[in-house]
Amino acid sequence: MKIETGYVELHDGGKLYYEVAGEGETLLLSHAGFVDCGMWDAQWEVFAQQYRVIRYDMRGYGKSSVLDAPIVRRDDLHQLLNDLNVDKVHLLGCSMGGEMVIDYALEHPERVKSLIAVSAVPGGFQMQGKPPDEILEMIEALQVGDAEKVSALQIRLWVDGPHRQPDAVDKRVREHAAAMNKIAVENGTWGKADSQPLNPLNPPAVGRLGSINVPVLIIAGALDNSEILRAADMMQTALPNAQKHIINGTAHVSNMENPTVFNEMVLGFLSKVYTL
Image (tube, rainbow, N blue to C red):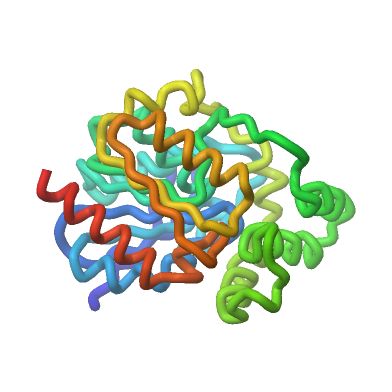
């Protein structure tokens, strides 16, 4: 498989690392906010057999430039698509990447052919109940500069989820996620950039979902936080052309834990979009 790699030089001097493979309609993969584009390793070659697939590291993650202040991530995505001459795109995003591609579909509806939101909540969604203990511990660890503890807590929070102990999760998935997470933690990305994003969509996406008219696939892991599952239910109801699938035995990164089922869901959805 031929893979094109490179960097997009952003208007403010930052750099986005990207990879492109395959031919056909363009499918862009946007990663979660604790890993990088390597989270899509089990999708990369499979999807590239049928689509021109783009994956990239958001700034502060992986091989892209570091950040010292908040940015507008959907603007980075817009420049990436322009630089790679993508007019219309299928967008697939997980967690923070999912929230971002929902915002992008609202801001640039003419560019989006379909939308796949994985373990995502729309902007402005109000979480209910007590925050997970790991969130508060992570904030405390950030304040004292304990990067190792921050990373361990993020893996517990997002890979293991609230219903499992680490030994119940595939060791290879945890190790892969931890290696990617280490880069973002050492860069301080969450504390510097993603805890308070710049220029959030106004009004937020949560009240505007009814205006997204493209086909939408919502995926969540059955073992994820209950608020992620509530958001999936809400989006299914609010979006006019949405379907929802829950993947059993997985938490926040279902594509890494059960790629076979995940890939079948995504490719099945996209094949129907193509025939519309």
